[in-house]
Image 1 (cartoon, one colour):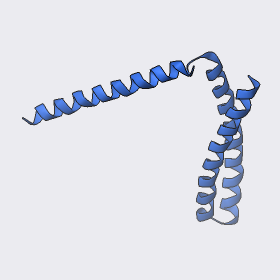
Image 2 (spheres, rainbow, N blue to C red; image 1 turned 90 degrees about the vertical axis):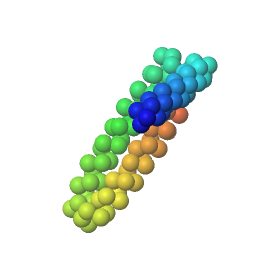
Image 3 (cartoon, helix red, strand yellow; image 1 turned 120 degrees about the vertical axis):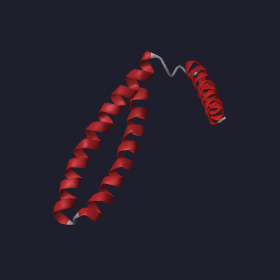
Image 4 (cartoon, rainbow, N blue to C red; image 1 turned 30 degrees about the vertical axis):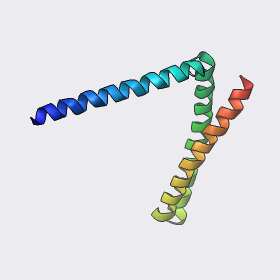
Length: 99
């Protein structure tokens, strides 16, 4: 009896995920999320964001470890992650207008 509920849950889960993927795919095709321009913009934006992110990570981690220790280093790296996400967002906005 236990395998029956497991199988039913698995089938229900696969069905729900399939429906969600279908909805996302149809919306994406309408919004043209899968065309070449979208891919080109996001590749360039990721590249620019990662260059800034990795450079700042090295500088901040070394400076924080030398000056203050682990507590400040972890706080700075957490805030740097947020900066990395923001730079990605800004890069997407810039490259969307350029291309």
